[in-house]
Length: 68
Image (cartoon, rainbow, N blue to C red; front, side, top):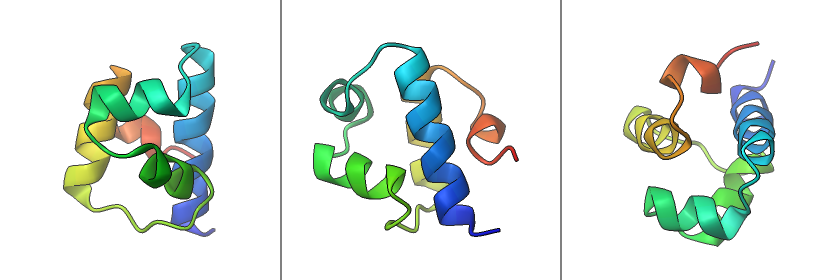
């Protein structure tokens, strides 16, 4: 399984479940909307620090972002 796509799907699912737009997640996380879009589409290769920051912004465990 491509981890980039897995992370992207999880971020998008959690973001949508919370009723957030990409712009709102970008504001909460400190990343750009373009980065969030690329991440959700599996085009970004996030670092451990990035996963941690996104998880904090989504108020979930970082494990949730890599869960199959």
